[in-house]
Length: 307
Image 1 (cartoon, rainbow, N blue to C red):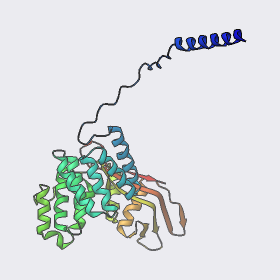
Image 2: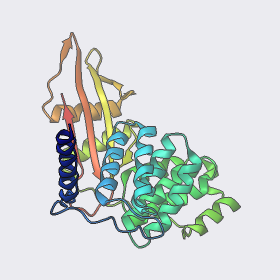
Image 3: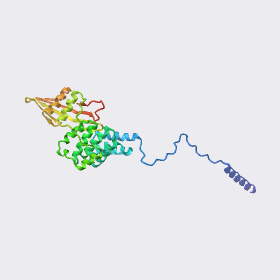
């Protein structure tokens, strides 16, 4: 019995010694190439990578082309947060906010865009036009002067057409204190519109542009270009009487303006889709004419007719 106790005691002593001698586990190695701790953020507004800004601006432009104004405005507002005081983002916000029904935001953003554009004539011209859109109803005289200043900074058929339409309103010739204050804030002095630049379009394209303008189709501006667009164009020539009569459903126009469109379609060798007796019908899925706002890019104004 004594021998047994001695054996047990010996085993316990051995186990205790073994545990005492067992080395502590080594710390886990640090993987090579581990990133350093993030640097402290400097005080002030830290800007996001430029790529994020660009992606939101592109998304906004795509939505703008689809006339999804509210969604486009949200994209441009996000881009502005990533790049504060950016004239381009502010200008796009000013434009889309008008059509999104947010005139106060449009006026605020466009005013800021004009000031932020500084010596960039193209951006300044765009922002001046957008500001004119924002105040056209409440300050028609100031809007007209903003359009004139925009045309001076950069040629644009959309701005010229908008100015011509506004100047038919007698109120556009009557200054107001509020309007004068706005013009002074953005550095615009009242003046006269510059002469229209000579078109660089091919003759057949210039004829179609003139025909669509004569039919009352309005230029739409956005993303650095102006566009005349008619979807599902339908025009008819009736030979039941002499002289023949001409009429279009889209755009809704009759007489010589309709004839000018049909003559251009014939010159483009667009075949009629239907001949019923003495009535000939011409259709096109879309008629689109484009002019770059800057005017000095070298790219000609051009038209495309899609069957």
